[in-house]
Length: 103
Image (tube, rainbow, N blue to C red; front, side, top):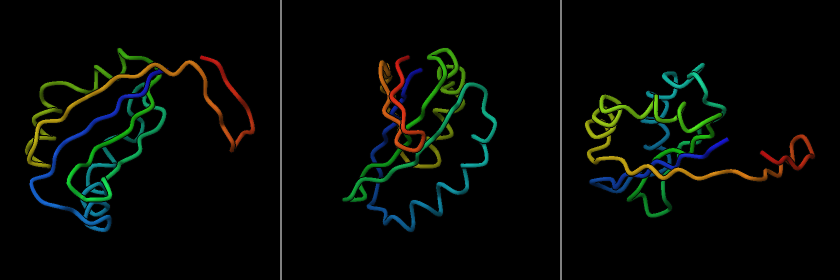
């Protein structure tokens, strides 16, 4: 598994409520997305940055999502180009299942 953290600088500060309204408009696009396990939208406490934390089955699945078209959609919707950081997940602590998993 792999985590992708997408970050973009916002042109103006957003409240959590404003961020939630915008994020709800794109969330349906990620339901049943091939290889996507979970996505968390986020906004910084200062409201100057936002993005998503994605849990993917593989980096190939993630890269299939982050196309040039997707990056352009993000830039148009949020007013900034996204930065994408990929991180490996060697171990997960899952308190809902009460398990520790190695990947």
